[in-house]
Image (cartoon, rainbow, N blue to C red; front, top):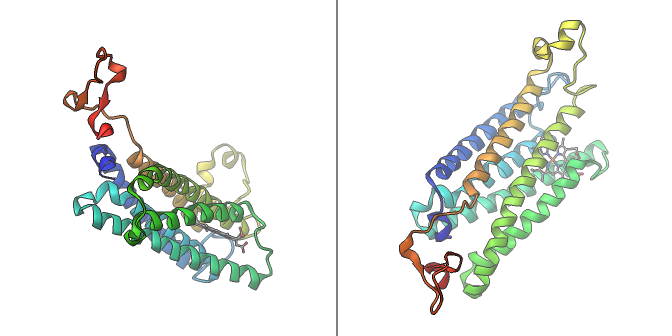
Length: 271
Ligand code: HEM
């Protein structure tokens, strides 16, 4: 992990901070979205019930907590490796709590409404995300969290790149699942969801003139969706491992060979 922090540039740290700010704004807006009453045409979530708790808690977990967990090694490393690792694990565990709460509520809501389970793209992608996220959490805790298990350092080193990769895959999946969830919500509420019909030539050719026909809650939902995408882009930038220029002094020449530049190895790889 220390090596990763060393390779984090200033702009990546700024992207990490931006990602944290975006996740906070998104989560606040999700609470506002949920707390307004829904008259089935405005697109608000309609107060807190089992369905809206699902949406809000999932955004709280998959946007806010997930972002804090991923960004911890990027922006909090000055707290020391051990504390940063604990914060990383804590936020991932909070996300697991959010997933369980959100899933429980939406299943209860489906049962209450007599809606068939797993009948949408959103729900299937949601299950895929949960599987990817859950295995990374379990294997992460086993490999890096419980020292008593005595997992050999070599295994940890081998596993770390996959853990990082699947963590990023989870972020991308979470972004897609939240988008499909918002789309689902914007469609099911009201006869045509957030769609409107245009009444004249001007509205047909200039959508901006009919903008206010889209319910405020719908606009809010779509705004939250855009913020989630921006958050994902900022987080990806912060996590990306850009090639770093290794200073000349850290190179050693392979013995008994001509100093061809391709064969020079960084010291840290040899040690
Ligand atoms: C990223 C985290 C999320 C996961 C893992 C997730 C997962 C799921 C799952 C598994 C179901 C199906 C439950 C069943 O069939 O009994 C579901 C339903 C639903 N979710 Fe999500 N969800 C997430 C986020 C959201 C968000 C942010 C919204 C936004 C409003 C949302 C809105 C809905 C709605 C309206 C349903 C009911 C319709 C349906 O089954 O597709 N979800 N979700």
